Image 1 (cartoon, rainbow, N blue to C red):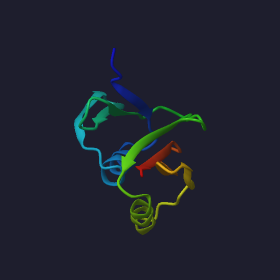
Image 2: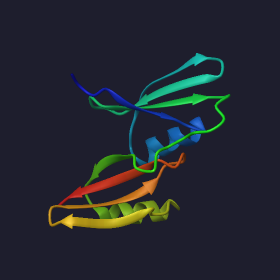
Image 3: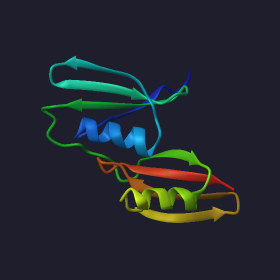
Image 4: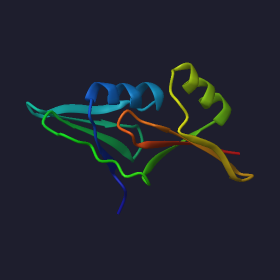
Length: 120
């Protein structure tokens, strides 16, 4: 068995696509309209993808406070500067629970925690 994707229902499809492409750096693998009021995009270039689902009639997006998506980066300091320049606030951190790892969190446009991880 292998993990395929994490599905995220989103409030604003274009805003979420822009975030995951321009901030996270994921490429759109495929994008399609399922029905006139439902659109789906798969992003990423490896085995595991992020799936964004938008439905016009969805009233509320519920994201658990204890769920996050983690992305490996080269430098916590450089990423924090980059995000600050883009006007994106740091949600929490940076943290360094041991000498080999540093990380921090931001929130995506839907309130999902995004973790950026530097392996030291």
